[in-house]
Image (cartoon, rainbow, N blue to C red; front, side, top):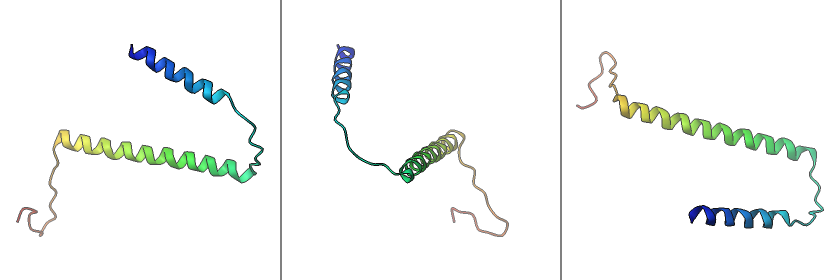
Length: 77
């Protein structure tokens, strides 16, 4: 039943997107490079977010080690 509903919504979305009218718009050459840099920026941000999440997950599983520098007081005091 759920699959049928998803297929129906997908079909309606495809039907609505296939009915288009001309935009009569001009896109200059700088627009392509702007869109490309935006896509690269989003990909870099998603990659960084995944990396940060992964390191936090690994830190949780392994347990964090406390590092002390010689001559400094412990963190709990």
